[in-house]
Amino acid sequence: MDRNRDIPVRRSRPLWVEEPARRPRMPDPVRTAAVRAVLFVSVTLVEGMVTALFALTGSWFALPMLLFALASVVATTWAVLDVWVTRQAWRQRHGVVSLPSSSARPVRRARRPRFP
Image 1 (cartoon, helix red, strand yellow):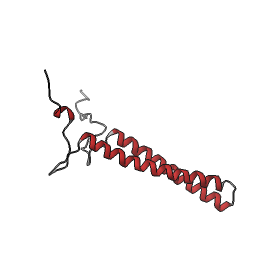
Image 2 (cartoon, rainbow, N blue to C red):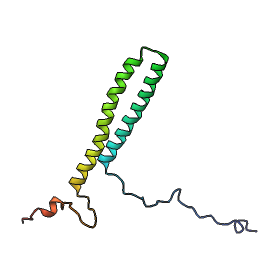
Image 3 (cartoon, rainbow, N blue to C red):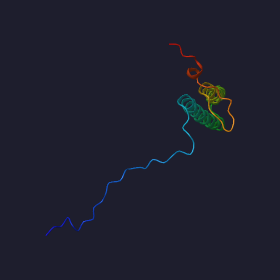
Image 4 (cartoon, rainbow, N blue to C red):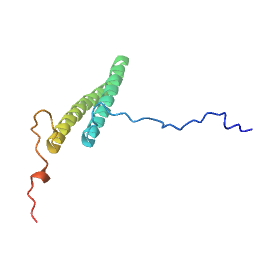
């Protein structure tokens, strides 16, 4: 008697199915700047919370933490502006096309005359 005939055959399926993204992926330099900015923001928020807790307890650590938190706010502002500047520079260099009209410049290789 053949027992394998009664067992249903299971086909292997992939672990995940790729779905198209809603928005295109950010360019690598912009994504790197964005990750750096998120890290700066998170550290600044933690420093602000620690500073507030030190101030509530009356610890002498409150003043140094306040100075560190203020420096972190400046650095975080710089990091967030870096994301914006990097994104704009990438768009200018790589000519993002916006429809229906585009002011994007063609790639330099296409404009450069070819000499034999």
